[in-house]
Length: 258
Image (cartoon, rainbow, N blue to C red):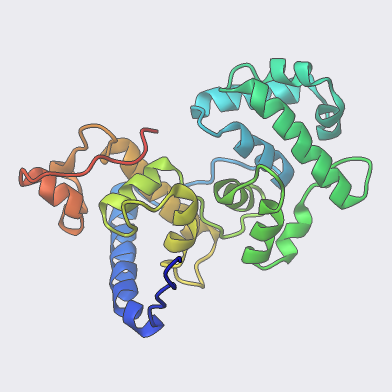
């Protein structure tokens, strides 16, 4: 018989949460100063276009997914044209990114589902998501097959909607784990809810974007997957992983190589 789940009272967890939240905000301030926030938004795409772009970026270098997106837009004039094209033609347009044979039919399926929900001949632009609470808008997107937390957050935050939903990429995830903001077995998908809970409820899209970008830059420029530069890390005093490494202690390997 499976043992009954043990329910931990919320008040028991409160001190640990408060401490981690304080650390997250302290790290945010230092990293934003280190990498010269506020950061300009890199995209001005409408939300439907940002959704497709985010789907293309899965396990793909930014330069490659950008090339694939640009080729897709140059080949097909509208998103309904992408939806209705032969899958082989869409796959050919996406050849610059990884797994175009998987992403082409997935993107077409997403466009068909959005069209069906809109009840129109073409996929709707998704601008209506701006009128929803953040959690509701994310749930709407994540109810589409193939759309997970990272994609939903990227669609809302990076697009012209500028809705404060925080995506967690592999760099952000790695830095958060090494700082012990989340546990070593927490996946990227699960990390979205846990890390977003640390952010003040009144933060706007720019502040949420700065938080994500600062953690991402730190992963790219200092907290590398291999041989992180712990000795020059501006948050070393907050990082158990780095302190153990600099002090010669044994550390656990990171969970993601990308």
